[in-house]
Image 1 (spheres, rainbow, N blue to C red):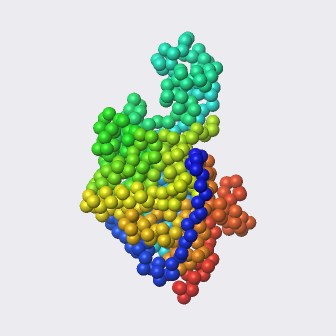
Image 2: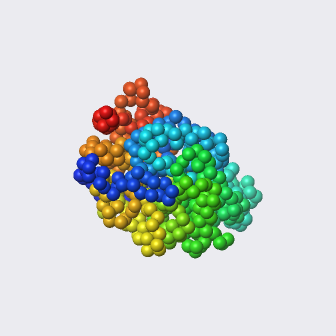
Image 3: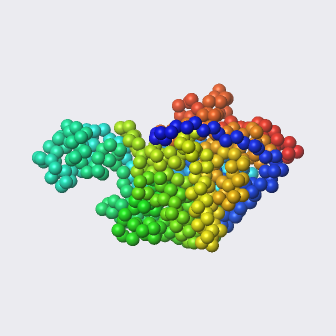
Length: 490
């Protein structure tokens, strides 16, 4: 994992927690309209992948427990993890690319409704991704996987089998000369498709097929009972790659900002036409890609104005998290888009540069909101990134930087934290320490937990343990909060 050279240790910001009365009067705990859906409060748990689905993409009891635990904290909204829109293998990630996934997703919706007593609205994040393969062993790559093309034949002697053996024996320095940049990447990082690989028929036809695929997935989400869908236009995946300034497609779906916006807008319109007017539709996209030649804040402002003008019900801003600058994976592992400098921008730790990890995405998000407002749109803007206290959230809302404040890592550290603040128990919030222990588990595709609670009460027979039996999978209950709730109900 990349780290900044400055390596300054930042303390978690001190917090002054409000009384229940002050919280009730606050903007953060006030309602907000998100298209056709009203949130009881402007608190938001963004999508996090917990690695708890089956290998075939089905909802599991562990998935239900994960979302039940967040729902018990009664945030205004929860966004369910990135869920694949195509009916293709994707490992233990949720899928929604076929009707057979709907019953499990219905159960997930019912679980959240019940656990939050109906206080929390539930969205699901819809994602598409291209092929990413694991970094291969040297001999297998050259003898089995590498396609011998005319370029290689012109730079090497002999027939194709002879060329393969020559490549196996070559030094890294010689390979730098003989292989193309994409061949070198496939050897050293693993094969990865790009939206610009229009020589591949299935990549070339993405603009023709993706609107219908996303629309069908959104229809299933509505059937399952979700309040809305979030189109995943962020980070390293297909739709973000169409938006990226690195998208040089020549078919009208790349190059200029208008060209790069074309498919994301077509996907949105197809989704909007598929679902009823009671469903909210928003998107998650990047304020900045944070890579060389990538999209910057000016692009994000233009995207925001276009999305709002098209009628999206909310815009949620993230940053970074790209394949372009990711670290080289070990042999047998896939490249991970949060290991390079752009990944650090997405999830910075307390060991950081001068700017630090807290509120790092606020200023770019505020610029997007200002651009959207200047264009005459009142679309709610969701900000996230190192927000972990009531004062932070309230000041952002009062200052007009955002309309909704989201927190992922802090919500994982204490799923009850928002409810505790709301009832005047903020001093009992378990505060995230931003070491990215959770992100390290995600990188290894292990079930995600928090180091602040995953070793607690492991002997309790009611505790569900991780696959290795060493960690609990959900945060322990908050007995004082439960006792207070019981007293108030009497």
